[in-house]
Amino acid sequence: MSQTFILDGKTIPFADGQTIMQAATQAGVFIPHLCYHPDFKPHGSCKLCTVKVNGRQTASCTMRAMAGMVVESDTPEINAERLTLTQMLFVEGNHFCPSCEQSGNCQLQATAYHLGMMSPHFDHFFPNRAVDASHPEVLLDFNRCILCSLCVRASRDVDGKNVFALSGRGIKTHLIVNAKSGQLADTHFTLDDKAAQVCPVGVILKKRRGFAVPIGERTYDKQPISATVDAAEGN
Ligand code: SF4
Ligand code: FES
Image (cartoon, rainbow, N blue to C red; front, side, top):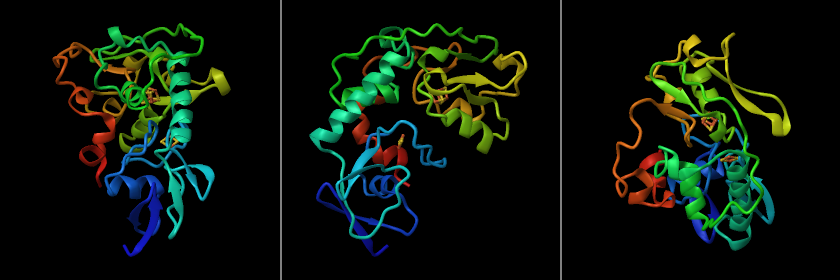
């Protein structure tokens, strides 16, 4: 690993084929992200991980590291853009954190805190998608989906089940369950599936487990999302 690049003034070593995100994570440097997960192929949809490489914007989760590149990430300009993207995600869904059982464990909420988001700023869309409570163990609240496709990738690539898919185009894109009825109960989905573990927000919820962790002990109560880089993804 003799090659390096510069990220916000810090020298980051990388191996051939690694992305900027992978190398930064390995070096313990946090770059905000929502659709990136170390276990899956990058999706490049949320754009939260955008950095400037030699002055040009690019997604750090898909951009391969190259020797000598100069990368800016934690700058007021880039963080302002990340904040706008996060605010857009908040208004596109119904993210009423005070009543969401993922509050404190949610990557979107923790990212908003990290970026200093005080309000969603834009007008709310107020989607009205029906909740799917058909499955005995899992409830789906589609109104919180940020279309990261992690559940789609996990179900297809790890579980071999293809339970979820993204359907529609543009602003009409939404998550669907791959069953004739469209109901989770009519798939082979189980709580042991990788797809049951990966949702970064509060869509895929285990029934009868909500609000079990006291406030103060939830994932992002204990440390901000920027401090989870080593523990969660340091491989
Ligand atoms: S349900 Fe969760 S994991 Fe699946 S696409 Fe929506 S936000 Fe991502
Ligand atoms: S983490 Fe790179 S685009 Fe979402």
